[in-house]
Length: 114
Image 1 (tube, rainbow, N blue to C red):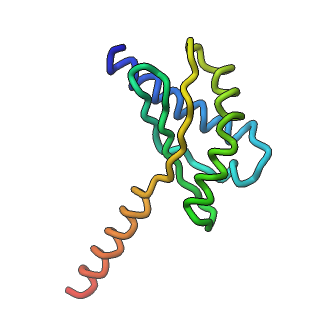
Image 2 (cartoon, rainbow, N blue to C red; image 1 turned 90 degrees about the vertical axis):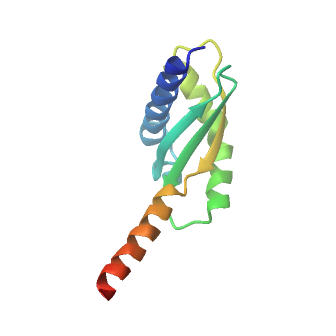
């Protein structure tokens, strides 16, 4: 499958999973999750879904909660997207936002010292 089509599917999955969490999830923890991106394998068997949360919880605990909800999310995803096979979802906590905040803090400290 072409890489453009894979990227389009990944982008659509990001949007649809975000909608599922916001509109159809009953758990308040799931409603606080923000999907930051998605990577899909070329054979559509696996999708790595990157997420972040405003909840102050251990990242491993958040990943565990998301993995428990993955079958529900996958079922809803299959209903909303027209794919022959719905990929297995693997949720990974996205640390890039925290990393960016850390760098921004360091840069502002350096600026204050000058």
